[in-house]
Length: 102
Image (cartoon, rainbow, N blue to C red; front, side):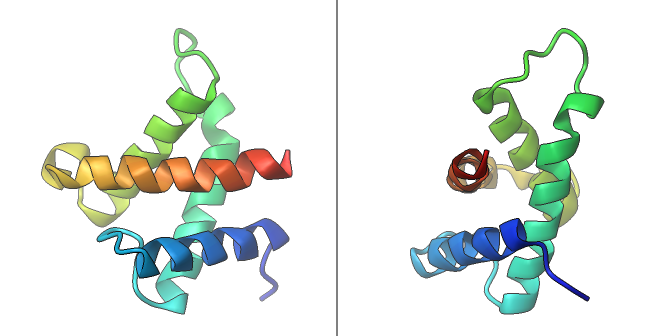
């Protein structure tokens, strides 16, 4: 299966975040690839999924991406506890990749 070029850049950022000490950035190439795929799908489906009252901006997309990671890896945002701040930081790092590509 071919990897989307943007996903390769996301994997590189996830690898960097993991080596930088992020407790939520994953620890293997397979996990980074899975997280990159999730991030790409979530980022580009935001406009379709968002409630009409939520503005389409970086802050809301970052929060949505962080919540998506929490739902996937922690079960829910409430179960993530203090890790939500780590997921938000990671989502900010990935947002830089998305916005550099647009």
